[in-house]
Length: 302
Image (cartoon, rainbow, N blue to C red):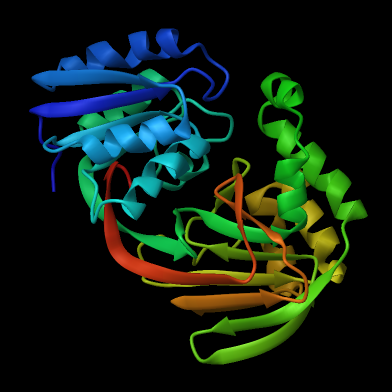
């Protein structure tokens, strides 16, 4: 489905990412206005306000979110209050912009905006975890310590690098955890340093080195990482997708499963990282909602 050019909203938040919000809006607003008859720009000051504003929308062709993964994650929580959302266009203005990378959206604002207004609308899978939603991933173990351990000033100065500095530090310090993992009808007892439940395939700007992950295939990809796999994960962080793919395939200690319904029960309650935001705790129940959210993608997206 092609993008309809009548009415759209542009949401932005001052603290999203590294660039001043008003400067970013000045870059994208004229491009949107060249295609849409009406563009309503809304600046929000909190996640609650963003959700409230989105829930109140009654008739529009599209919502554009100017911000990072946190802004997108906050926006989809509006689904706790409404049955569906208008098509969403992601304008990368954050630190990592991971899900925009999954959608092949250019990482400069002008190019991203041009690509989306000339793009199309597609349906994507969405995961509900307890009462929250995520598009990209949910994780527990050292990834939650990595996200939680990032100093805001360091994040602003170092950007994406800060995630991995924090990750490498916590990988050496983190303890394993154990519990029971249920995927559809399969039950597995585990001891792990990290578990990832993935719908997308980019974390901290790094493409995850498993090529079969797709947010449109009707399945979640679940990875269980024991402590013996830490070296493999470090290699991915240091070398990137292309040079670490073989290591992931050869590391038999990493358990990779697929499914639609996932339940994680841990011996002690653990925090959960969803799309880079820490909220929800175990026990965690995840249900995949197939083709339940509409996103605007560039014409080059495959």
